[in-house]
Image 1 (tube, rainbow, N blue to C red):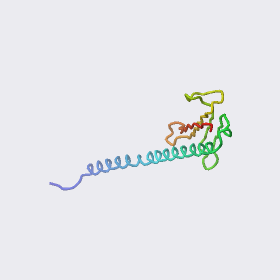
Image 2 (cartoon, rainbow, N blue to C red):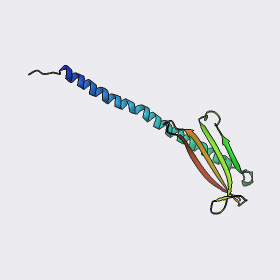
Image 3 (cartoon, rainbow, N blue to C red):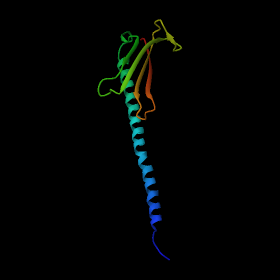
Image 4 (cartoon, helix red, strand yellow):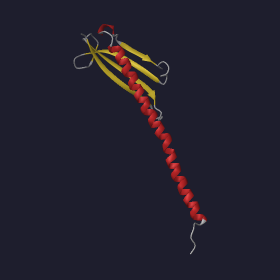
Length: 131
């Protein structure tokens, strides 16, 4: 009885190893994209929080109503856009056209997903009451 591999067995073994290694290697780019998406989401949250802190630090009367669109943001955040909307709301948190002593600040930071799914966004809503 011969001990050893035939040429066919060796070719099959090489083929199986090649398929296995290829499958593992295709996972690395996807993992990098998921990591990049998480990083972009975190940066968007921090940009929204920074704008919230900037607005909250002002007095109630200095916070003007309206919508401000920053598209794109300044360097190094060119891949992000930010929309800030300030409106009056009533006690049930519904939109109000008149002064109620309560302002709703909605900040939306958008970016293009590295997963190429669609445009993604992070939204922070804050209420500011007159003191």
